[in-house]
Length: 364
Ligand SMILES: NC(=O)c1ccc[n+]([C@@H]2O[C@H](COP(=O)([O-])OP(=O)(O)OC[C@H]3O[C@@H](n4cnc5c(N)ncnc54)[C@H](OP(=O)(O)O)[C@@H]3O)[C@@H](O)[C@H]2O)c1
Image (cartoon, rainbow, N blue to C red; front, side, top):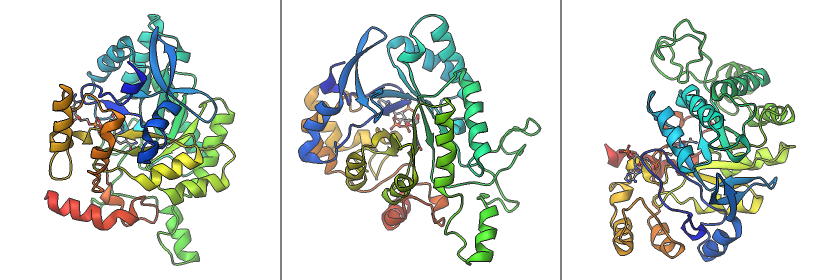
């Protein structure tokens, strides 16, 4: 893969593109592309990389594992590593880390690549951030499932906290001590973290002002870096204010913010802020998750015209000169709007709510 083709589409439903810093500043797009992508040898192949604040290289194209079904994901991850992918994006709440781990272990044992050639990311789920020990336990469980000694990157998956329910029937895990990823209240609604709400209610009457403060979770993640369990830590779905609060309090800087980024949702202000702060952006749902604002992204006339001009499929590739046309498609549409959390103070897209609600209404 040539560096100028860094945004090449990747295959079958698991694609995760990594966008380069400052891409969204149109005038800087070309320069940023060349400034942040370097060639490095991985698995005998030249691969474009981004550079993290520690100097560690992160392969620019990664394989996502969300919604990958049991039975499929092990084969998919193994095939991807054999084909040259070196960046695998996992998460506890994808409920498939054991299979991903079996694929990684199989590749390492077969000598397909060395551990240090892989860049493995996972994410702390909303149910596991109330106490520092929860965070460490969660990371240790992920490492056990992935059969690894350390992660290259551990992210706070969402800036909200759910309650902790063990052995719930809805997740099919009754009896095995597993934590339910989407815990329900008796009335069927989602159970949010409420221990601190009670404290807040007594103290300030401000129910949703804070749930689990991000700075507390972050301190627990920093301890995991100190303990050698992760070489980098970061966040996902954080807005600018949430990032700034972390930066004000941290001793280990967030390396990455993983966010939804595609032509329908270009988030130029957040991209510029992250670039200024040296926080790398990883973009997810770059193909719009097969969906979109009215017209699915890959079927939009702009994308179709680019594909036709290049003689390629819509998911295959974009070049810096396509950016103006693609960025003009930004209508603030999100696939992962998480509207169920919109009443929470920590909901990251509060400023976008009128637009998100309008899109949600139109989609009905
Ligand atoms: N941090 C977070 O909160 C978060 C949230 C969402 C995702 N992620 C990460 O990002 C990864 C990618 O997200 P995603 O899978 O939702 O994004 P995506 O790549 O935008 O969407 C995948 C969709 O694109 C379609 N597709 C893939 N390749 C295609 C091609 N060559 N031609 C036509 N259609 C194609 C797939 O269709 P088929 O299903 O028909 O194959 C699937 O519906 C996830 O696996 C996960 O690792 C993170």
